Image (cartoon, rainbow, N blue to C red; front, side, top):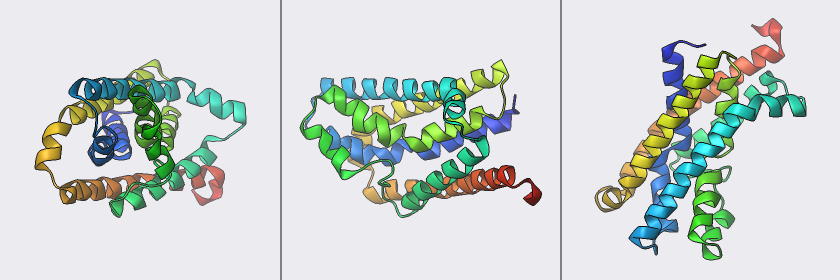
Length: 212
């Protein structure tokens, strides 16, 4: 099991990747013509979907790595590069195509509101490859039952934060400018870039022990 500061770091990393505030403009756009009841149903479905996706990654991530024969060091490097690309996009205050594409945005035009809550809002906009990779990477640091418990609590706290962000969307859409949202995205992008570099460095050390 890791110390408390590590679990705080995990939560901050997940918060930076999921970036609930940065996702708000897209959520607003995808639910622009929804009634109040439809909006509440969409946000509820989204929150539950994100929770299920990340908990699934927590419980089955190690099995998937073993099944495909992928070493944790290789996964650290790949995950770090992915996070770094996302961070660079956030530093430019735009959403990376890694997490959200125009085609996925257009999904709303042909499917039901509940479907939109799962794709593209939950996956890949929020619980995308970056968040899933982060959960799997940090899960590998310990196999103690308490470690899984605290990882689960981090995910739960993240989902609660996401839910609160969704509850504030009506107010934010009226009182916050796009500039303010962009500033928040840049700050979170800088934090995410530092975490990504740490992932890559640790992965390279694992692949090439002589460099340690």
